[in-house]
Amino acid sequence: MPKADVPPRDSTAQKASPSYRLAALDPDFILGDSTRGVRFMLEYQKAEDHLRARGILSTIVVFGSARVREGEPWYEAARAFAKLASERGGALAPGDLGRDHVIATGGGPGIMEAANRGATEAGALSIGFNITLPHEQEPNAWSTPDLTFRFHYFAMRKMHLAMRAAALVVFPGGFGTLDELFEILTLVQTGKMRPVPIVLYDRAYWQALLNLEVMAQAGLIRAQDLALFAYADTPEEAYARIVEGAGDNWRPATEDGVQT
Image 1 (cartoon, one colour):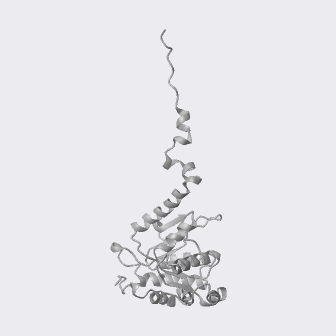
Image 2: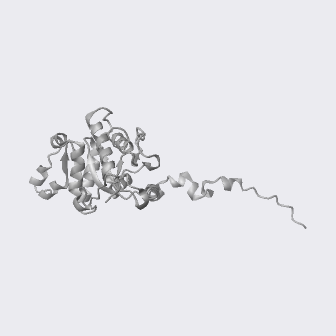
Image 3: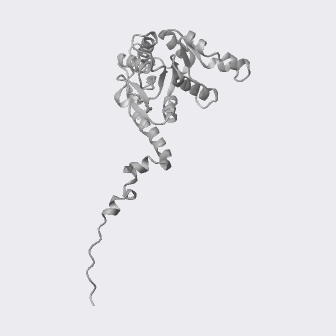
């Protein structure tokens, strides 16, 4: 006897299943526990691609409090320093061979905004490495738009702040500033990062906050580790400490903005 015709089976349920989604377009999969390593890699690669596209070879990283406001001494000092460093450090040089000593910050308000603002006022590019926080951090309006990034992972943000750093200037700040400062100090001390000038702005603040000589006296760090950083009290002095600390590794700009 002839078989009865079997109606075609509908595949709607299969197509609607999360397992059928393309892996790269499946938010549940991409944001799941098992793909944390992939997300970590993507945070590295996205920022890296943009930095390379702009030819960013090295940076001057500026840290400091997000709570400082325009008109306050530390804000205006960070603004003046970033403008001065952008003009003299080479960030204004033609970008065909890459750009050195571009100002980079954590991308938020306060000292970060001041430094991005000073670089912009000099006519230079500047970078903002923002982080997603429980109370959302908004990017400041002064970092170069296509060099303004947002990270989920503090570790990857720190890596990008460190990997191109030719110098570090740390203005007064709180726990986050201390975390970033000691991250760089540890990398340099342990040889995981090449030595770079580390300048603490406002000697009185830092010496009142940190007596690192106690660690040296207790034999917990070497006496020469205290030479890993220097102090400065003016924007001019901060830039001078960078040039002095970098020695022959620093390539200053000439008056026309072109590096020698």
